[in-house]
Image (tube, rainbow, N blue to C red; front, side, top):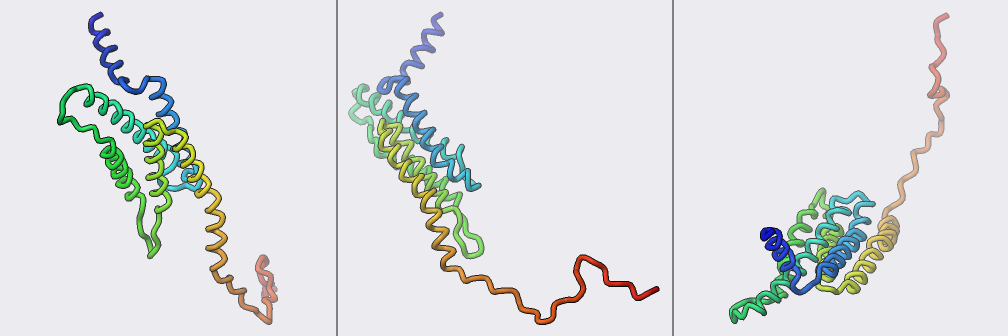
Amino acid sequence: MDILNRLWADLASSFLVTPPSVATLRLVAAMVLGGLIGFEREWHHKSAGLRTHMLISVAAALFALIALELVQISATSGDPGARNDILRLIGAVTSGVAFLAAGSIFSAGGHVKGLTTGAGMWLAGAVGLACGTGRIGLGLLATALTVLVLWQFRALEDRVAHHDMPAAPPPPFDPEPDPTPHNRRPPSTED
């Protein structure tokens, strides 16, 4: 029984600042909002899709929740040298997600590919941080703007791209059409 009490105490100590129900809400919000961003990438068959964006957002939210707990631990420890710089966490998450996003960007035939996917991954990390720190409304607003950009501006971008493309040249004109239909064999000359 003593082991169970120690296990429960260890589990309960994970939630000094953020109650388990609130932590769950923040992590689920990060997962859903990251999924909304990733859905567009998945729909268009991009390399980083639904699951990737969800995982990035949940991981960023978890890092934020851990940072909040660590700030509380360092504040109650009484150690004057303890660091509680939450901005370092934001920098670390941003760098980590940027590293992943950079891996999705490549150049082929003079064209750079994957920039929008990389930007979406980076933004999913920011949305996760917002959710993890309790700023779910801010994460929701950023997600709505991102989905708007990904879906609506794609159509505009396609129109602009097709507007600049020259029309395909018409097929060459043949003044004397082939008298032999292509679906029949020519008549036999042998009797």
